[in-house]
Every structure is written in C-alpha cells, then in structure tokens.
Length: 376
Ligand code: SF4
Image (cartoon, rainbow, N blue to C red; front, top):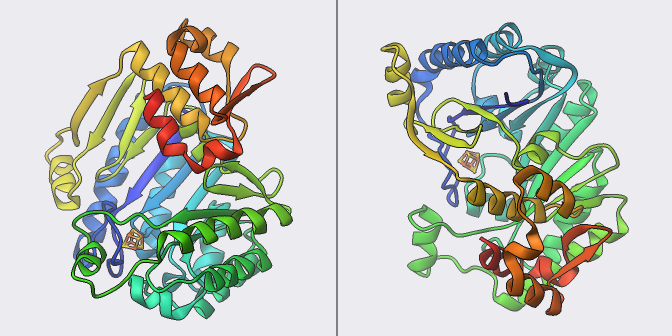
C-alpha cells in the first residue's frame, strides 16, 4: 500500500504561455461534476488501501486554488473518511498567488492543509506578463504574507530562470526577493520550452527571445552563489529547504516508493505497476459516472527497470542513493550492473561515492541530464 496520495486539479484561470501540464482554462462549468467524480475515485481507491496510513496528501495541478473552497473542503473530507491519515501527515496544496485571499487561506489552513506552495516564478512584473502569469509580483508577495498570517508555517515558492527578457540582474533580484520572504522551501527551475506551447511558437516566430546560453550560465552561477549564502540546504537538483522542511511528498517520488494518484491524468505507481488516468477532465468525469475505471494506460515495470528508475530518481537528491539499500531492495549490485559506465562517470568526476552512498558531484549536477541518460 502507498503512503502518498496525489490529487490532480486540472483547472487554471488562464493558461500560461509555457505550460505543457495537464491543465485547462475555461472549464468552470465542470468544477462540480469533477469534484463529485474525484470524491468517487478517492472513496474507491481508499476502499482497497488497507491499513497503511497516508503520510502525505498533495493537491497539485493545474491550480487547486481555482476550485471553490467548499468543493476543496468536500474533497478533503472524503480523503479523511476514505483513508487512514497519519497524525502529522504533510498535506500540501499548490496555489496561484492570483487566486487566493486571506479568508480562503485561513479556511484552507483550518481544513487541514498544512503546507502551501505558491507558483510565483518571478518578482519582475514584465517577466510575469510575458510568460502569461495572472498575478503581479506584489500580489505574490502579498499572498505569501497572507499565508503566514493565516497560520501556514510551511510555505514554499517556485521561481524560474531562463525566461524571455530575463537578465542575470533580474534573476538576482527575484532570488533575493524570494529569500527575503518568510518561506521554508524554494524550488528553482530553468524554463524548458515544450513543443506545441504558445511560448515555443512565439520563440520560433522570433517574437520573443530567450536569454543566450552565457546569460543562463550566469543565472546558474547566481543560483549557486545565493543559495550557498542562505540557510537553505539544496536537497534535490531544483529544491532547497530550511532544516526539517523538505517536501516529504516529493521525496516519496524520488525514492521511487509507491504512491496513489487520483483525478484527470494522474499517475499512480504501485506494486511494480504504473497507471495513468484519462487526461481530459470531461472524459474522466464520464468514465467515473459510468462506473468505469478512469485508468487508460498501464505498464508493469520489471525488476531491472524499477531498479534503474530508483537509481536515476535517487541521484536527484543531494543525499544520493545507498548502495546497500538498493542491493537489498532489488538483489542487484550497482557496481556490477553498471560496470564500466559507472567507472567512467566516477572517473570523469560526475558521480562520487562516499560512505556507501552514490551522489551527483557538484559538476555532475550541471550535467545531470547526461549522467541520467547514461544510467537509464
Ligand atoms: S498556473 Fe501552472 S498549471 Fe496552470 S497554466 Fe500556469 S503553469 Fe500551467
């Protein structure tokens, strides 16, 4: 049985130009139907969940805070009645700063949400506008402050670099602003331009320009410099936290442990199988209403494939992977399995091995994609 539950809310007030997530704008008419279908799926999955307690619940999207509060409370109540939830479980919600107010945040907090993660992306209005965010920098700062006043102690923000029109100086400004807020967690991502998004089309037409490679390298350097001087520990390639505030839910993914996903497009990984629900929210609702499983895709991972995934995901974490635990879990030795590939990555200084744990080195983090491609 899994100890983590992910709940997908696929709605957004507007679609950001760079977004390739399973999210949709203009579907407010579907909110009530979707909530009902979701509650139904949570109840059904909870029935087969057994005795193990949920240690984490994560509302992601999309924009969970786009859903009216009373529906969110309904979903939460069904989670608590369908699953055994551990005392002190981490219950996270992603939020768009443009969709919250003090009353909503206070009521989310008293309903049981104890961690909130704001998609801020930048503290420069010009950059927010160009990527299609619906909020301003001041609104993002205000949302973080309101969350604190509403009783949230565990607040996270996401920021992105490599945005159109962004300079090293403006990235430094966003970083400094982020660290000046009362947050305990920070996710810092480089923008990846996904094919088929409006932003990718605009870049292809030459309407907007992404920063040149040397500017992105400068931003990388600034990120390392700023995070090293803050009290935040980098515990994963893109994630930083104060002590005791690592995201417990995401750590379950990175350790390749079992998790349950519910909602449109949600993925579950359980007992060596991976399953994905129908992506389209209306299709998802129809399947649930007809009493048909919303799972539209499933694969069984064999032992070696699961082993390789655990290696790759585990290397994302600064703590790396324990060679002994891996061998115990899969009966496979990392040294024997990867042989010369491992020797070469160690020899090139991209991986390092200390006290029985394999890590990405500082240099290895810069070439993480290359390392993962060798080990996949
Ligand atoms: S708020 Fe997030 S999920 Fe929604 S469109 Fe923007 S990036 Fe995508």
